[in-house]
Image (cartoon, rainbow, N blue to C red; front, side, top):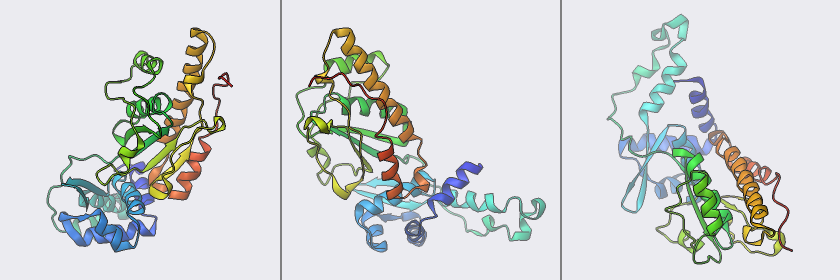
Length: 286
C-alpha cells in the first residue's frame, strides 16, 4: 500500500459517521447490508448515507453491488488488511511480529467480488439540455474515467442537442453517440440513479430557471451563457464555443481532482462554489 492510498483510507475514516457505517458492515460480514438498512442504522437520510458510503468505497474500504433494485454494501476486508499491514510493516525495525503482527490476527475471509467500480454520480443541469450540460457530461465522461458517472438533463428540454456543440465535441475526440436532450424528471423516480452531485449551469442573469434538487445531493452552480444566444459570424461563434468548452473543462478537471474522501459535505459544497469563478465568454445576445 502506498502512502497516498493509506492517507485516503484514513481520511475516509476520519468522520465518525463513516466509522459507524464500517462497524455495521464488519458486523454484517461478507453478505453486507442494503443501503437503506445502513442509513437507518446510523440515523441518516438515504442521501446522506449514500454520500458517506461513496467516500468509503472510493477509499477501497467497502464495495457496492446491485441485487435487483437494491444496492448492497459490504466491507472490503482485503482493504482493511492492507491498511493494518501498512501500519505495522515497519514495526520495531522490520519485525512486525513484535507488534503482534495485527494484519495476521484477522481470520481468513472469502474472496471478494471486484466487478463493481466505485464512482460518483454527477448530474449537470441547464434549461434545454442542448449545449452546456451536454458538453459537461461529455467532458466528465472522458476526463473522469472510472471515478465518475456523468449525466445531464434540462428543466425544459428540446428535441435534440445543439448541432454546433455536437460537432465541436466530435472534433475534440468525445463520444457523442449516447448524448441526448432529456428532462430532469428521468432522475427523480424510484429507479433513477442516486446522484452524489448536481451542478447547474444555467445563465441565471438572463432569467433562465433551473430545477432545485434540495438536499438530494451536494449541489453547485456554475452559471454559464447559453451558446444559442451567441451572436456574430460563424468564426466568432466558434471562438465563443471554444472559450465555453475550455472554461467547463478547467472546472471539471479541478472538480475531478478534489480529495473527496477527506472532505465533508459542507467542504465539498464550498469547493464547488469556488469553481464557479473563471473566465467565461462575454459576447452574447442581450
